[in-house]
Image (cartoon, rainbow, N blue to C red):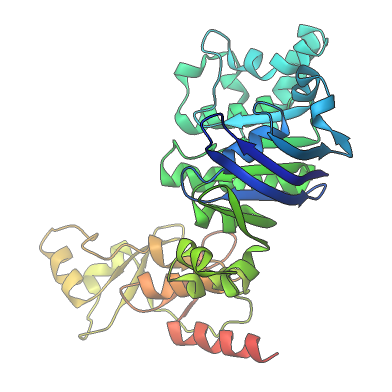
Amino acid sequence: MIEFAGVTKQYPDGTVAVDDLDLVVPDGNLVVFVGPSGCGKTTSMRMINRMIEPTSGTLTVNGEDVSKVDPVKLRLGIGYVIQSAGLMPHLRVVDNVATVPVLKGESRRAARKAALGVLERVGLDLKLADRYPAQLSGGQQQRVGVARALAADPPILLMDEPFSAVDPVVREELQTEILRLQSELHKTIVFVTHDIDEAIKIGDTVAVFGRGGVLQQYDEPQRLLSNPANDFVAGFIGADRGYRGLQFRHATGLRMHDIRSTDEAGVDALELRDGEWVLVTRPDGAPYAWIDGAGVALHRSGKSLYDSTTAGGSLFRPDDSLRQALDAALSSPSGLGVAVDAGGKPIGGVLADDVLDALREQRSR
């Protein structure tokens, strides 16, 4: 457990970065510190491993005041992941991951062997182990950074905006990976971000910091969305918090509509009325595109099938959330969100009204 008790950080020029912080991070929880730039979230996290020393107050880890622990010993027992991974460019991937175990006295041979297992755990191909960081993509580098932090099996992991330097697709993949790892490892994680969507997606609890390093609210994501503590929190979360709250409601049991479909070879034979849509599938049955009468005409004239008809944004799984189901329905040109099974094959469609009906039913329980 990590506990902040009246912790303040004030710099010599009088600037207060963190103001009288009281906060407890329970064992095994993933807690996200979020807020605008300069709000003290990163400073608060860095005080945990004494990269920054508090001006006053007490910060304890597992009941021990960190100010009384040797900072090197403290840091060797806490994993640390930073933006852009912070890998050592002159070391191979496997040696980057093995760094902390070697510093703690483990033989290099044993540390490298264990590092391979950790690389596999974070979803990296072991063929990358002998490459250098510059030979990896941004997403691969971040996975290596996570692997390095996990290599010595620390009970606590600090993550300082680790995914902010990668593109949105890779960022979503890495968020999913962290959730998977946490479900297996149950580490105590403090994760810093400025992205409220990221905070809500991955956090067991979320601490929202405001200007002057003042903690504004510390709550579970669902309560943060439904009951912001003040105008600052409501404004920081944004006007669409009701929509985002749908991610905490399940999509199981949604009414399913039949979807007319054809493979690409059958597109030329279609006869469609205005407003009538057909889902085009690949040879393996996976959704490929939506097409209407105008699209059929374009296809017959030799133009692309992709003319505003792609299906990718209108797919969801029945075990997903209402948010994903509603987004699928709203993003589909046909108005039908496509439910797919575990193999990616369509099993039916949902309308936005179906999602709203399900929401009303869940609220009435």
